[in-house]
Amino acid sequence: MDLDPLVLSRIQFAFVVSFHAIFPVFTIGLASYIALIYGLAFKTNNPKWERLGAFWTQVFAVVFGMGVVSGIVMSFQFGTNWSNFALATSNFLGPILSYEVVTAFFLEAAFLGVLLFGRGKVPNGVHFFAALMVSIGTFISSFWILSANSWMQTPAGVEMRDGFYHVVDWSAAIFNDSFWYRFTHMGLASFLTGGFVVAGVSAWFIIEKRDTELHRKALSMTLWLLLIIAPLQIFVGDMHGLNTLKHQPTKVAAMEANWETQKNVPLLLFAIPDQEAQKNHFEVGIPSMASLILTHEWDGEVPGIKEMPKELQPNVPIVFWSFRVMVAMGVLMVLFAITGLILRRNKAYARNRWFLQGLRLMSLAPFVAVLSGWFVTEVGRAPYLVYGQMTQAEALTPSLTGGMALFTLIGYIAVYACVFAAGAYYLTRVIRAGTEAAEQHDDEKHRAKRPLSAAEADFD
Image 1 (spheres, one colour):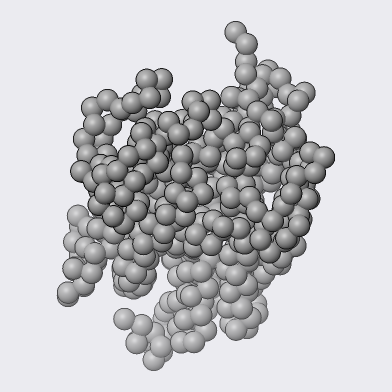
Image 2 (image 1 turned 30 degrees about the vertical axis):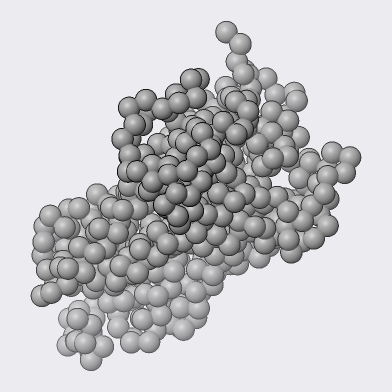
């Protein structure tokens, strides 16, 4: 059996990107939360905030390290598997990825050491500043990475000469037509991910009756955040969808499994897309709803997949179902955020066991949403790597063989399984140790024996 290097390279990159994506989307949101916690500690001089910040900083350190390691491997693949792409786009992607390292990674690395090891050794104001710089660094990093990805989706500011992309307008290339939609969408996704993880872990501590008041306070803050961010994400997602319809209509058609260009398109709740036959089986939908969502008109016209030749169509079943998984997770997040508001009275959100158990499970929902959203974005762009200009086949390394791609794919799976298992084991230990461990390592660990300060007494 012949091994197709293109198919194996796509699987390999999908695996590495999927493994990597779950870490930065968490650390971006968590870094902002940690900065907020240490800001409150600096303002109130309340050691309970310091203890909470120290606990989540340990979690952040592990996840940040795993994200860095997996991100380096991902960038290597541009040269090993997609060298034609790396060469052709080097005039743009080379500087962009370098800017990410210089402006973001160095900033994060420098202040992460102060954040991790400076507690009790530097003034509280300096420690808070370090947390703030790490948080800002994560957003700067996402800025450059999403600029690069958005440019691949909606290329602008360049011209092709002698097989190379030459930048003629850096502003147009960096701030391309889909950049702000993707950057905002991913930023909100990061806050949702960090928020639901913090909520889920806080709920677990409350159920276990460990440091209940501290984690109840953390849960309360997070639920307010989710109540704002979750509905806002749906609004931004709708704007992002309209932008995608304008620039990548075939991707949107695949998301809706709409084969023919037509009006009054139903919103399909269930269907089995048949790409070979170019039709759907067992459709269940809401009449005209897709037209309303995509065009804001009941009888709006939605482009069909058949507008694109078969060989240039994305994998419709993957795009169709990934989109529905992402939307389902988003709806669940909104429902839990609203439920938290309903349970605000008499602080029932911290006593309702069903709600707390649900939050534990919902800590996984943002990761599922992010991964399914990336599948929609990347699979929906196929067969192009630079949309409308360079196909994946053209971007592949000419000397790559199927055997080489298979060997490295198996290697990545084996190594990443070990990395993930080790990281999960350590995170489990950190969470089980809880905030009590942070208190034990505090320079003032015996302060619990003295009377409460005014700041501690006012904490609740």
